[in-house]
Amino acid sequence: MLGVEIPLLDRPRADILRAAAICFMQRGYAASSIDDVARSLGSTKGRIYHHYPSKADLFADVFRAGMDMNFAAIEPVRVQPGPAIGRWRKMAAIHCGQMIRTKPFQRVVWEGVELYLRGATTPEQREEFTRLMQSRDAYGRIFREAIAAARDEGDMRFGTIGIAEQLMFLTLNSPLFWYTPRPTETDEDIEAIVGEVVAFAARGLGAAEENTR
Amino acid sequence: MLGVEIPLLDRPRADILRAAAICFMQRGYAASSIDDVARSLGSTKGRIYHHYPSKADLFADVFRAGMDMNFAAIEPVRVQPGPAIGRWRKMAAIHCGQMIRTKPFQRVVWEGVELYLRGATTPEQREEFTRLMQSRDAYGRIFREAIAAARDEGDMRFGTIGIAEQLMFLTLNSPLFWYTPRPTETDEDIEAIVGEVVAFAARGLGAAEENTR
Image 1 (cartoon, rainbow over the protein chains, first blue to last red):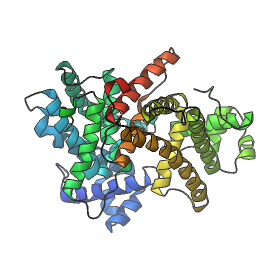
Image 2: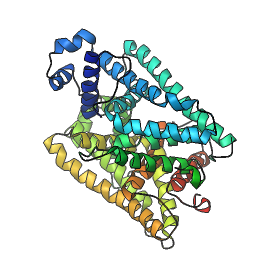
Image 3: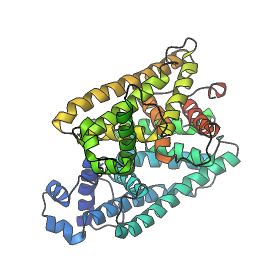
Image 4: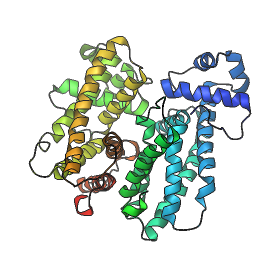
C-alpha cells in the first residue's frame, strides 16, 4: 500500500502526501495536525510548511492525489472497444482495487467529499474543493455512462440511474470501511476480495451471472 | 423525519436528542458543541447539562437511541416463520427505511462506529462505546443469520459471509450518504427508493429475480 505510485509528483512531496494520507485516515481531518504528519515522517514541521502553507492545503493535495491515482488507473481500459459491461467490469475491479491498495488516500477523498457537502470548508478552501468535486463528478460520469450503455445493450437491468450509480459506488468503495490489510496477504488474496465485491455490484445492477466475473 | 418516535424516553430528553442528532449530522462530532444544540433548541445550555454532563454523553445517548430505534423497528418481523429470504427482505426494507426516516440518528451511529474504530474515544467513553458496539454487533448478527439461512435454503448465493454482510449493510445504509428529503415527498416515494435499494442488495446476494421485491 505504501509503495503506491503517486503520479506527477517529485519524491519529497510524495513522501509527505503518503504520511499525511495515513494521519488523516487514522485521526480524521479535524483531529490531525501538521505536527502529527511531521512526527510520523521523522521530519521537521518546516519541511512540510516548505511545500504546504496549511493543513487545509495538504489535505486538498492528498485528495487531489487520490483522485489522480483513480483516473490514471482506469485510463487504459475506459475507452476499450466491445460491450459496455466488459469495460465496466474492468473499471469496477480497478476502482475497487484502488480502495484497497491506496486506502489512506481514498479515505481522504471520502472525508473531503463529506466536509464539502457539510459546508465545513472555509471560503478559500471552497474554491479548491469545488474543483476537486468537479473532478470527482467527471470520474463518476465515466462509470455512469458505462452502466447506462450496458443497460441500453441489454446487459444490465436497474431502476433509477442515479440510485444505481450511488449503490454501485458505495459497494465498490466499501472496502474503505471494512478492509484491513493482513501481513501475509498476497495480490491473489486482494483480487479474490475485489472479485466478490465486483460480483455483488454486477448482480445488484442486474447483470446475468456469466457477466458477474 | 423529526416526528420520529424515540422509544423509552421522556419528552424533554427526546427533544434534546433530536436536536443533537441534527447538529452532529450537520457538523460532525468534533465540530459540534453543547452550545450549538442549545441554540438550535432555543434553550439554555443549562437545560442540556441537566440531562447530560458532557458532549460525549449526549453523543453516546443519540447513538444508543439510533440503535434502539432499529431494534424496535425490526422486532415485529425478525422471528416470523417461513423462508429466511422473506424475513430478510422485510428486515432489509425496514432497516433501509430507518436510514431515510431517522437519518440524523443513523448518521450518528455511523460516526460513532468510525470514532470507536479509530480509537478516538477517551477511556471513560471507551466503556460506553464498547457496550454500544456490542449492541450494534448483535443487530448485525440478526441479518447475518438471516442471509446464512437463506443461503442454506438455496435462496441466496454469495462467497464469504463476512464480505456479503458488509456489502449488504453498506448498500442498505447508503441513503445516509446520498438521500436528501424533498418537501413534496410522500411515503410512497420513500418506499420506491427503499424498494430499489433492497432489490440491489437482494440481487447482489444472489437472490432469484422473484425474490428481489
